[in-house]
Image 1 (cartoon, rainbow, N blue to C red):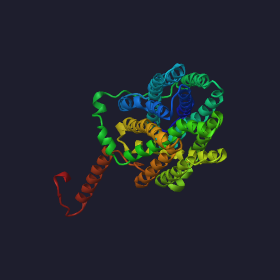
Image 2: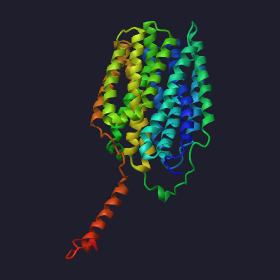
Image 3: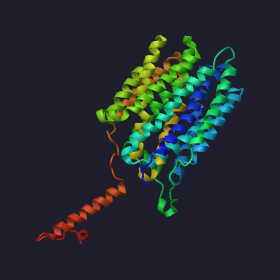
Image 4: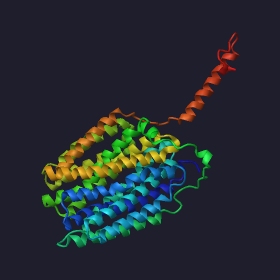
Length: 428
């Protein structure tokens, strides 16, 4: 079956991703609240949030290489098992180091699931469908980000914060396990490639030097860092401003709902503005809105800021996926996506740690100013990137073959003209 036919697999993938991402989105604020209940300060919360991304840094490229040479689907159940186990064990852990370790396991599971899922979308979609299908795929993430914080806010609270946050983590683990129900027959049968057919692996440095790939990676890093720090640090802001955990959960879910709305209307926005303008405008607006969170505004104004910010942040992830996939060599797409995820994890590892240091020195609202600066830089990168990187562009081997075919046709045409001479040996 050719790419672009029968999108039932995409619906099942979106459902599975919704449960997996919902578990992670429920667990991340629960980990922060449980860490605070166990005596952590702002710096310790930042370190635990950073460990979530640390372990996957070493696994992303090998997993991408493996996926380029084989199937995508096996990574999905492995990811679900690690997410469920990491969530549940974080709830049972009674020390900050143990919570950090299980947070890393949860991050490794999320990485495995996302590499397999993104590679599946890239492989089973026609090139003209990448923007749409990646947009629909990321709706699964947004649904999880919508439901997870609401569920966490409903369970966490009261005088015994340690017990309620542990309960939320165990429930998140059970929710992740539900993703198994949508993983049946999700990948079309593929013929295994022989070692000769696979050819040489494309070096990582060559992928990173491909036009469009570095820009896509950085934009994705900036957008995900903003989303991640919002999830990890808005509870800390709420504690300092006297906002209840249930209200914080609703605010995070409002941000996720706005992201879903953005991705539902992404296709007409792309037609209207184009990829470059859309990425640039949303990054600039996102920078201003992130800085606005640092202001001591009332809850209703904070809700408006988060809704607008969620809409702006909804653009970066799917369009950066398309940018990387269409710019990368055809036989290294999964590796390129893995490099993009490595950049994401670098942001997730470094940004919360930096946010913890900034919060310890300048206050808990200061990390959002830092995020605004990061998004502003990404808007400049988006402006300098090509509007439609790789769209409709044939692969290098195909371009070379077409060029040779045109040269041969031109030579034949010259040979048919009276008095035409053979100018090169290649014309013979």
